[in-house]
Amino acid sequence: MKLSDADFEILRDFIYNTCGMFFTLQKKYFVESRLTKRMEKTSIKVHGEYFRFLKNGSAGSVELKQLLNDLTTNETYFFRNPPQLKAMEAQLLPEVAIPKEKIGFRKLRIWSAGSSSGEEAYTLAMLLLEKRESLLKNWIFEIVGTDINEEVLKKAEEGIFNAYSVRHVPENYMRKYFKKESADRFALSPEVKKLVTFKHLNLYDDNKMIFMKTFDFIFCANVLIYFDTSSKAKVVQHYYNNLQPYGYFFVGQSESLHGVSDKFKTVHFPGGFAYKK
Amino acid sequence: MENNSKMLKAQNLVRGVHELPTIPEIATKVLDMFDKPNVELEELAETILVDQVMASRVIKIVNSPFFKPMHEIKSLKRALIYLGFRQIRHIALTCSIIEAFEGKTGVFDVKTFWEHSFGVGVVAKIIAQRIRYPETEKAYIVGIIHDIGEVFLSYHMKDSFQQVVDELKGTSQSFIEAEEKLLGTTHCEVGYCLAKNWNFPVEYCDVIAHHHAPANASNDPTLAAIVNLADLFCSVRHLDYGGREWVSFNLAEEPAWKILKEFAPNFVDLDVERFCYELDERVPEVQDLVNSLFEGMIK
Image (cartoon, rainbow over all chains, first blue to last red; front, side, top):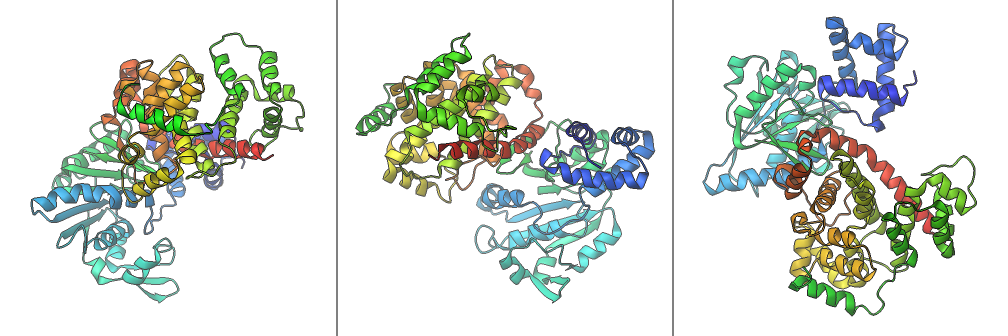
């Protein structure tokens, strides 16, 4: 169903204000098609009526989650956020590593929160491996992936991925770190796998969150959008506390922390930004 | 500012060029008109009609895909009515500057350069609106022309400017750092000398000179800060004309941010993330506009 510009703006402002994810006008047709699908499922014929339904108590918030799932495609893949990776390579890794190298503290800790099947955590592991002959020679890497869903964690530990997952892996990484077992089955090399530990963790669990200490970088993409503002603020406060004083925190593409925490400083780089402690 | 060594060096560079680009008279007239409150459409039409080349360009541009008129527009006057008073002034001014450097090959791609310039113009105008700066049009125009010093260096100091661009590759140095190292001056001072030479109004010259150090602006530090921030935002939102391998900034540490917060204390509440995403939305629009300008430039 055709979505007018005015209705698109109503929906995108509602999603931004409740979830902290911004859809640009260029994504209008994508939003329109996903929205149409959800409206068919809920048998609602008019946009205005569907928008009112989204605001309608617990049924509305369940539906909002479904819509968000569809809008974020709810599937992860390797090298998902190139501007972030480029920022890590070009600036943030050297900025964090060089002072540590000077005092002989050669250890990097990275947390992929809401890791799902591990693509983000493993992408970061490969990025670090590529630096082990230069910037990160003789360094120890500790990458932790956490998720609330045991099943995806099992998948992450297996390290077997389908063609969709690996479709953006650069050629040289593909050759080095993957073994193609069939057209739709790619096995990650043990060298990458051993750098990442996966753990079950509920981000709401304060008692466990306080033990996730001393990270240099924390990544949390497409997770906070499902939380209400006060839970978001609580989780982000944990991230803040668990970062090293010079650490960085990243959210996903088109996500925003505005109104959630004003403790971080926003550092801009081409195509994105990071939050600095 | 005029006495320091960078400025002297820039003066020498600009004077040393045998055929200094001349800007069509119309550009200066158009700029003057900004300061007159009651300029009539007729007056603008007459000014443009004096320059037949310009008049035909304006007609080409109005018929380009960016402006999409329902029927072909054939007369200048109808073009002026269709585009509106403001839009036409921007187009006339920009065409004049492009024209001043036409027919030469420069170091960088002109189209990307103008995308950056128009991007800075658009973003400067948005920032000006947000902080309730009284002259948003001025912010737009000065945003468009802030880097004319780079255009001059790219065309008239080709070899040394190529060295600057080479020096930047693979580093996070800024243009001004590399220019100062290799040329002893920067595009800010060069742009200032050129703008003076073209008799641009003093507030425009001031921003061109200080858009990288807005606190030093003597005329209007707020306007310089607006352009400085717009420039920074464009450099990270796909509207950069390159050279540098890497660019990043931390808003809280930017002097321009401090100046604007003093001008408009509520600016501190700006939703920076949303602001960035909204700028991403404007990128194709800026690219379309520049495309249509260049289509109009083909004789």
